[in-house]
Amino acid sequence: MILASEIEREPEGALTTHAAPVVFIVDDDVSVRESLQALVHYAGLTAETYASARDFLRRPRAIVPNCLVLDVRLPDIDGLELQSHIASQRKEMPIIFITGYGDVPMTVQAMKAGAVEFLTKPFDDEILLGAIRSAIERSRAALSEAARMKVLEGRYASLSRREREVMALVVSGLLNKQWALSWVSAKSR
Image (cartoon, rainbow, N blue to C red):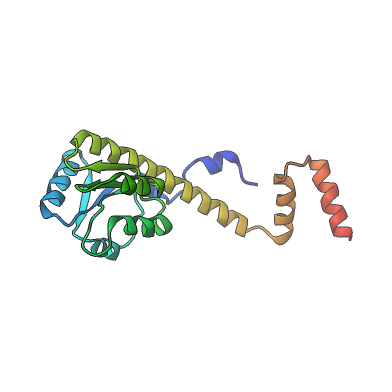
């Protein structure tokens, strides 16, 4: 039997939510990358920088709290395309867009697709750092939830066919007597 207290706590070996967070920065302008990296380091966080979306995509997936500070206009794959890819592959990675050439439709598209923030250059450092901290907390929560789900899936997979049938009746909200009668009558058919 799975206890609620076991589900709520973080599973053993899942240290990823306590690992040092990483801020990924993708911008084709070297001066922007360097200044953002310095700002992130000044805030006590680790930053990794990439000049293009393709460079970033070559990096193995980070299973630590993280976020992506992403320029909209990039030379190879634009930021909105990269966002679409990340949304399907890396759900634990919130995105903060930065751009010097933003417009309302672009902003709406990014936000509807799940961006945490959309900032126009030049932007206030504290606003960016606040967005980064918020994004990292979202990532931490998503990683923690994924770890809990993995534990539950493993436990479910360990159940026998009969135990799964009984569990389905129990979680349907029936009283013990009701699901027992339902299960027995189904077996007698």
